[in-house]
Image 1 (cartoon, rainbow, N blue to C red):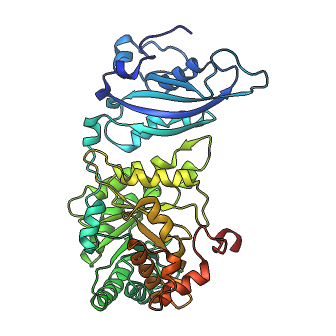
Image 2 (cartoon, rainbow, N blue to C red; image 1 turned 90 degrees about the horizontal axis):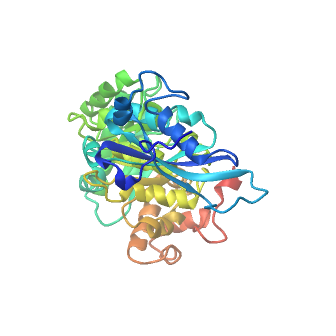
Image 3 (tube, one colour; image 1 turned 90 degrees about the vertical axis):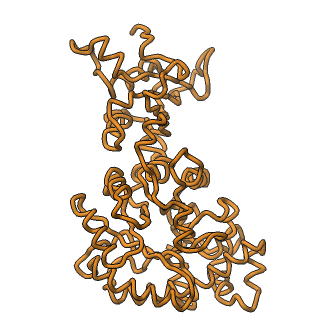
Length: 440
């Protein structure tokens, strides 16, 4: 191999508006030459293959070849390798000409994590976009501010509940449960990811049953409730599902974002006739990010890319309950939803997966008020029933926003619903916290 200045460049030597830059974690055997490996990534995913081909001209290479813009070994061996070292680990950065694939997800993924996803220990950690490329994506229609405006709720975390049981209820049963949940003070109710348009609970019939129940609860409690109806389906049916649901009265939608694909999510989010917020569900995401050695980082899978696709809020799994995710990954995902990003509005994170009233303080201390606390069993499985489950959450949220601890708030005689929840499941960080993993 010879040194080719074309594919080995400094980032500050690039015309950055021409490239999407991907950052990878890579591990290889001690004897593998890092420069040769990185060059293979750049070439494999752009102009060439393992051997030169006749039509890979200098002109083609100049316009379309990927550039290696960073190879960083961790630890940074420079003098010698330990005798017992078997594997070397790197962070590698490759710049891909954006015009190779354009402003879309399918061909972007094909380029930045396509064939190379089969190269062993290689994980896509992050992607950086030039300004013009980012501007091709509209991002969320509503985002944090838009959702708060719809709900007229500005100074506190929002509360979500997902319908349980996950599958099996008919439209009338779903509506009856939604009424109770909304009456307890839940802001956003969602279909479970397993219920979209099944024969026992068809989408449009569900909308027509649920929305009057929600409105009745709203009149009683004096607040607005959103219900995100799951429209997940074959790609050719998605837009029709969305429009028919809205026509029937739906005030929010949900998609299983990775099963349908991010280009399909973008299609829905950028459609001017789909004028309600869209929730991204997290199913299938673990299959993409959980391996420490391969796949795509949780940051990209759960937050950054769904946000770019235009989704307004996203279920993100938390380290508190039944789904394993590290605290560091969880925090980074939350901030990737909310951090300023040019014109792309913040996407509201919805931490869930075993969340109870005892987690309110912890979540507010992590992210502030711009979160949606997602609770399934914590509302519907409350010892005093679903209405009390919502009330217990709202009592805890109100207390924490006033600077009152959950322990103190639970002793207030007016907060019997909060006390019942704390007695049942505890407060996060205390010895008596209910352990969902051990309870299975």
